[in-house]
Image (spheres, rainbow, N blue to C red):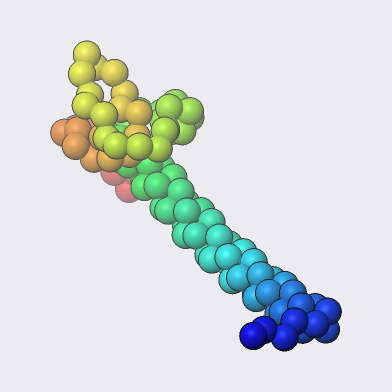
Length: 103
C-alpha cells in the first residue's frame, strides 16, 4: 500500500517545479542559440547581397536591399532585378567600363 503524506506530496511537487525550471532554462538557452544562428545567416545574406551589388554596377544597392526577401531563389525574367542575392549570383556578369589610368 501507499503511504502518502502532505510532506511527501509537497516534496514531489517541489522536485517537479525544479525540473520544470531547469527545462525552461535549457529551452531559453537553445532558443537564444537558434536566434543567434538566424541573425548570423541574415547578416551573411545581407553581406552577400551588398558584395554582389558592388560588382554589378547596373543594380543599385538601395534597390537591392529594399527588394531583398528571404526564401528560395526566384527566376529572373523580363529584365527585372532579382529579389534575393542567390538569384543575383545566377545572372551573367557584365564587365565594368574601363577606367582611364590617372598617371
